[in-house]
Length: 133
Image (cartoon, rainbow, N blue to C red; front, side, top):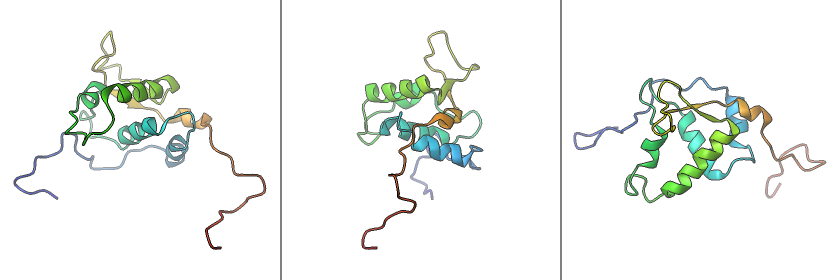
């Protein structure tokens, strides 16, 4: 919903959902190799952007504390993005990459989730146990 006084978002919500495999996305969100922070960044980037509107990693890091509502610092964000890159979840878009990688837009690749480290069910439990039941 928008009013005349509101400013449109810098990165608007795309008109259609991303075409990611929902099973791979769920596995990625439960990959124990990733920190919670890295999973949040992956979820943000996997949510999708309209063509040409995806932010570069530098754009996200450069958001002010007011814009991020005092969320994690820039260094924490950089570390989480590096974590995602090291596992292959994020790769620089070859069309925007500079020699240093600064300013590169990142492409989400969920195929590393095929090798995700998931927490196994405890032995002998084949259904979810609910409090009181």
